[in-house]
Length: 177
Image (cartoon, rainbow, N blue to C red; front, side):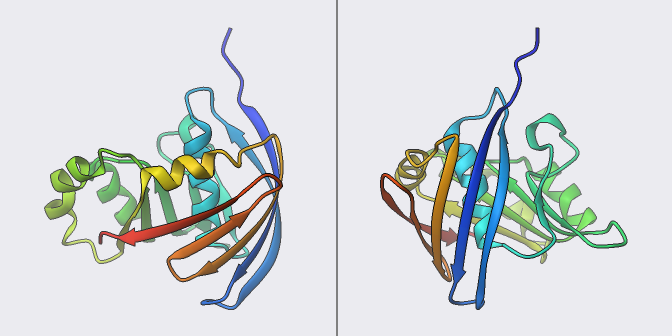
């Protein structure tokens, strides 16, 4: 019998002072059986950094031909493709061809090895952006995870402050590309 995803309901209040974006999103996140809460919370942070009307979570790990998060326009074109983790350069190349913009969020402690292996292969893709989140910060973020969350998120460019019922977490994303 296959394991089912665990559902997390989130009310996310976003105040992005750099983009002048102020909205509340009621989200349902599915934690895939092979996914950690840390990765799921990085998905949530990436959603907040890129929040806009048409942004949505996809089937994620259940569907390898889709990103974790995307923006599709009314003609079904992919405006934004967001991957979480350390995708290989072939996946990033395919995403670059399918989407107007690609964002990758890496949060693994071994990211230097991964980044050194693919950095030179990505130089020709102007629409690809790679962000690094410190593994200690992502671990702290995972401690906010709960089946029902009410989070307040303040964003100032590459800094994010998330406030939950039990703690506050500060994240900084570092642009690698």
